[in-house]
Image (cartoon, rainbow over all chains, first blue to last red):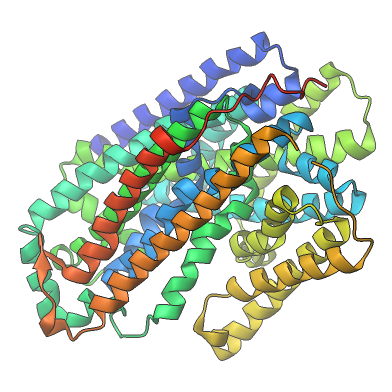
Length: 481
Length: 86
């Protein structure tokens, strides 16, 4: 691989590093207490940064590598599926909305679990939530690190270990010193890089393919099914594709890394702006990246490994230095997901477990030391695990997304809006969600998807039933918000 | 009840309603038009018609809707003043 590709990537890492360092200065001068500043950016995010940090946290390796690679193979059916994600842009903020922001301030909540703690007043809820979050997000994070390092490895020709080291150091330094604010501000820059990279590559690919009508003719000649919503072999059913409205659409409300952002904004004006920007940016990236995946097919036929479609087509249609800029986009997507998960898992350990149950009267100074320490330690453990990922971790990562949604969506959403929801409902809902998700996962692997829908659908319905049934039957009480 | 919650509840329902309409639009054009035989597809700006309406027009309409929502429908409330100084 030549140096012209590497230089823009190095500049990108340098800029991110500088911004992270710069935002760490804010922590010194904050007035609202260290915890709120370090783990929530002092609840001061404006509309643009809020929108970008939501998009960038949500958009990961799969939006830039795996997803477009699948669109390359499957055709328009997969682009249709990817567009179910546009809903996240407005749904999370509208549904958690102002009530979540108001209650989080009232409860003095810094983490999602703080909110659950006050709402349900139950140690079991807190521990259950914290443990599932730490385990699942930890695995998700490690998987993304592996993805990020593989990407650097394939672009630069460095050894995996070296690539992992560079990736780890560049993420860790700014997260540890800068906390949530550094994460959010670097996310904004990374989101910008994602948008610009998408736009450049889209134009280049359309030109290389001789215009959209021309590309359609090529696809039609190769396999007409590529142009249908049913996939290249006609096996993408309407029910299956629609069920992604839950997995990557409305269910995203239940993801802790998204929910915590819905309590970090400064005022309602920021929220309104973020709604608009978030929807447009999510749609722009998802639509165009997946179209690029399809358009790449006539230009570069016969790619076997889905994840390599985007890097290969970029290097083919763009001059090297521009390819470097475009390929910073998937790297940005991975970094911006990883940094958010890292600070979230760290907040859960420090705030939800340590301060809540081990040492409630810890001094500001020791909390500060602990927060830096835990974040660094977590990063180092992830680094070591990513060197040679254990099977258990890869296994847990399968449940990180849908499993967490099934566990959290009802305790959060109904906890916000339904007065009769109580801790028994919440506990039953979380346990039902996770267990039925894992059980159904094995069933679907063995016998094909039950009812033809994605694994996430039934556990979300079951956990809803559990929440309602247990709340109404065991010590039914009306909660005063 | 805190008067701000009334606004919040209304806006949460708007979110749910918008998602339902969005889904119907997306599903209707994708599978309504897309299930015809490929030979009958027409092409708009080069894209198959079902995809153009479902995903491209759908995305543009949703973007316009959220702009209108943010500008005219959603209300500003204060996070500081009303009784959360504890």
